[in-house]
Image 1 (cartoon, rainbow, N blue to C red):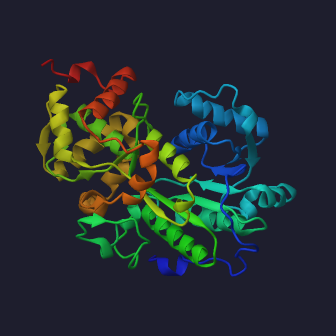
Image 2: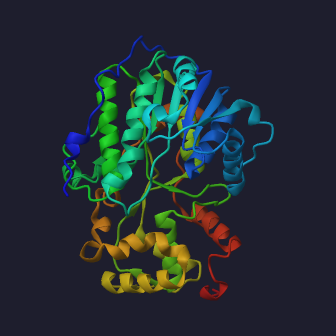
Image 3: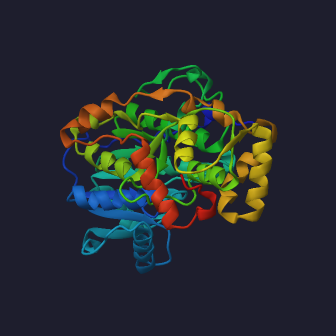
Length: 398
């Protein structure tokens, strides 16, 4: 069934500021998505670059189990959490439920005490349709905005995605600027991009009612630039590893916009401290490299990669998935059948993204998105070897 996404852009009429928002250094903040990949680093950087007490919205049966989820997540990404627990308070809840599923008295208390909200939580999948993602990605932002407006006005930091630009309106755009979205949703084929497109437009409704919202649009959130620690379910990471494992790549070309996870979280933490960031949009991306450049880098690492027609490559990918469950997240590509290669023509891999707003505000912090050069790729590669996801036999000594 076709969904009219314009009809999904709604916000209850009762949601509006009760008092005027005044920018200040936040003493208490709410963070969603803290048990995710970006969320782990975001919590880490909020603890290191701010003095705020952080309430983390988490699904768990108890506060102790919620905290254990946080620390297990940090440990998975080798992030230190010693002596930081005292600034963290778990809040049991659920994004998809009314009042975020938070107990009534606590919800009222948070509405009066929280200064800012960092909303990272999302259902990130390229397989399900819009309806399967709506509860978390759309209802979730509506509920977050409701809390942002209730009692004490709160600044909302919303992490969107560059995938919102995969619409017909932006087809052929050489550079996409840090502006509000224009045009209709026509052209977005994946439920994730659709749900984020709707969520951003709901944020614009809230802005027009005076609710302050800063929007961040990262590219593909890639591994930590210092250690190479990656998200095991990252689609592009798995795509590269599948090419290495099979020894075959599609004979196509497109742009890769990687956003190292530690840069992304730190940039958000620092941008949020500046009053000039309020109600702005930020593209957290690096200068892209092409798929063909990446294949050339793999050749320098000693990998013999044969380029073949896409149809043949997808068949080989299907066979790989059947043999190795690590690559199952790529199955959605196989399942697309006649539309398998549409992603390689999408705006996010054919356009470049302006990040002038980001560069201007982060200059004083001497922080910029690292280039996806050989040095960064080598860091990622070293960690792949450490985790033994690349068979040594696949490397030709040169």
